[in-house]
Amino acid sequence: MSRYLSKRYNDMDAYVPGEQPRDMDYIKLNTNESPYPPAPQVISALSGEDVSLLRLYSDPTCKVLKEKLAALYGVKAENIFVSNGSDDILNFAFFAFGKDKGACFPDITYGFYKVFAQLHGVDAQQIPLKEDFSVDYEDYIGKGRLVVIANPNAPTGMSIPLWQIEEIVKTNPDTVVVIDEAYVDFGGESCYRLTEKYDNLLVVRTFSKSRCLAGGRLGYAIGPEGIIADLEKIKYSTNPYNVNRLTATLGEATVDAEEYYRERCAEIISTREWTKKELEKLSFTVLESDANFIFAKTDAVRGEDMYALLKKKGILVRHFGAERIKDYNRITIGTKEQMEAFVKAVKEIIGEKE
Ligand code: PMP
Image (cartoon, rainbow, N blue to C red; front, top):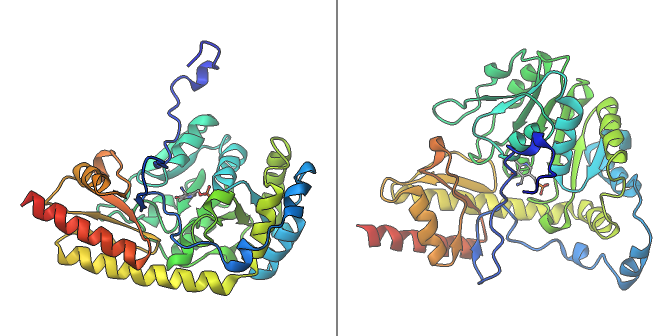
């Protein structure tokens, strides 16, 4: 840190992304990416011509992509916002909707919420999850703050039903409720239809998980026109070209390949259930998951040790040091073959420890 950094950032802890190591070929089950490549028509969507067009700025309105997403969800293009990954949208949401009244979100959730709150000087209330790690929707009734809930939640994978979201939205009419649906395609229930009924609901989604495009950096949000216009205002006040040409083209091709992605999601869901059962046979506790990862612990090996021993065997999972969850590891669901290798490695580790 230099002596020039504005004082208000001195105590801010930046977000720590999961490892992206280059030292060897790991089975990568640590950052909830898809194990599958994008659809064939997405891979062939870019040509040399697209690369040569990089001399021109991208379309700051992302018109074609917005229209395709709007058609997919049966909403208007004015109800769609697109940006450089959903992190970008969450950042804008804290910036735009959190400062006056503060924000609230669960104590165990996506770690970036806390960072965005700190970055923008938003007073943040972290509400403890219930003992069983579920979100108690009653804690969010009439909060009068920006509410941010990942549904399904991360790193637990657990979701809350639509009617509970509606109660939260209904009872906070003067603040925005952000529902982060990064993982909803793996078994959760989307609440985007409620954005037609309530003017304070913003649903944030991403191409990074179920759409196999994490490295492309593309996120979108569905919401009422007013909230979308506010986000556009922030985007145009920071970086209007934040979706690059190549990614916009890939995104458009992705929306046209819905069936391919639905099939990949179905495969991941089935592999998730298989992995959960295998771990349960080994006496693991595995939380119910509607996401492309599971959150699991065993009494046989400490969470941190399990992470380290798996890494030695070439398998990366994600361990979080926070007191409430330090016994657990978050395991992204890979291909069936990858998960078989994971279960085999876990068996060896448990065997080694006995
Ligand atoms: N929300 C949640 C809950 C996440 O886990 C992630 C991925 N780390 C994101 C949002 C951000 O995803 P992206 O910026 O790749 O769209």
